Length: 113
Image 1 (cartoon, rainbow, N blue to C red):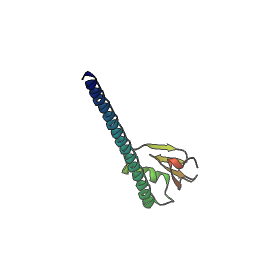
Image 2: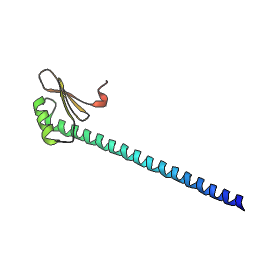
Image 3: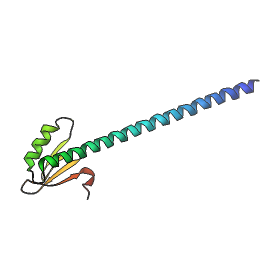
Image 4: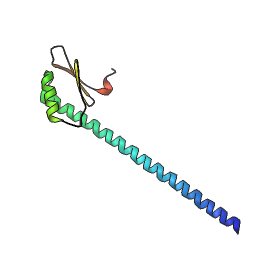
């Protein structure tokens, strides 16, 4: 009789531990998927920004016009980086030629090409 109680309680404890690991795995997967969805949403927003900027400013736009437009439309919450020859907003890179006109638009992950 005593051995049956030990086996029963051991089985119950093992079942609880297995259930806890399964719940942890489910929550971890849900959080990871949520992060992936948020990243995809951010990438879609960046691409939409790029599309709308190109439509509004066209390929021959001047550097000052692009900077002004971006600062007015985006404001806080975005990363602006101004370097010689380029101007970056989040993961979008605007490249300019020596005369200061827009020559190319790329994404940060395309930088190595």
